Amino acid sequence: MLKFIKHKANNIGLPPGTLLQKEKIFEKVKIDVVRYNLENYSEEEVSSIEECIDFSDDKVTWIEIDGIHDIEMIKRLSDPPFKIHFLTLEDIANCGQRVKLEEYDEYLFIVLNIFNFDDGRILNDQFSMIISKNYIISFQEKETGILNPIYQRLKRKSGKIRNMKADYLAYAIIDTVVDNYFIVLNRFREKIEDIEEAIFDEFKNVKIQEIYELKRELILLRKSLEPLKDLINTILKGDVDHITDDTIIYYKDVYDHVIRVIDTLEIFRDMLTANYEMYLSSLNYRTSEIMKFLTRMATIFIPLTFIAGIYGMNFQNMPETKWEFGYIMFWIIIVLSAGTIVYYFKRKKWW
Image (tube, rainbow, N blue to C red; front, side):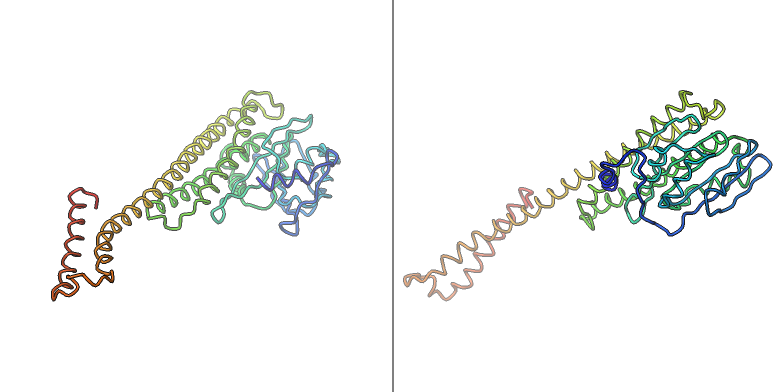
């Protein structure tokens, strides 16, 4: 969320379509090109966009680009045959865009978020995708391997993917990104369960900021999933030219998955709220127990201190101080007084 705010601050005053230089996550941009139809499949890694310009009507071309720091490479997508609008290129290069769907004459532009759970925190990367009649171009900030299952399906001719057009490949990509949310949610659930166990285990390794951080990450997830639900709902209405009727039906399954993720996030939010309340209740209970213990001890020692204070005075006319059994009798009184108080507490069930 702070990264998004910083990005917007860097964009102030710049003209539309300005591509900001992205920090290099790795030195070289990786470009993979996959071409396939029902009978043929090929996969290669190329070094430039120019090598990808080989489209044919009988094959689907998928260009996967990992790394968006090469601004000059992205600018070349505005040239034929791609002719990508400069506003689209700006959204691709300048991360922090909201999840959205934009229609152009020649292509459909979609922005998604990829979430990964690393070292107890959720990491967010932007995923952009251009969908045309016979090709798809996808962009990731870095190589995540999240789309590897699609490569395997294409190689094995698994399911309908090799027999369908680019819009079905787009569905498969969106479905894979959404399914990855369930992996993140499982890790999230484990984190919440660890907090619950720690609360019941006398606050072992529990920090109140952990609960706040998890709730903040839940907000980030929810802000990404709400527009994703609207995006898929727009496709289901059949108003998108680049998605055929044969493919729209499959988006119903993705929509159901998104709803499940949102419902799960609501459950997690309630669980975190309950954990926070339970943490405060347990903390108050422990404080109350400590105060009760200190009160009991003070109640016991107040009369003992009173007796010791009397016989600690330096008056000369104190007969008990010259009595042979005075010291023994003092301890007998002390023990009986303390025992009487403890017995009274036990009878009242205050101890």
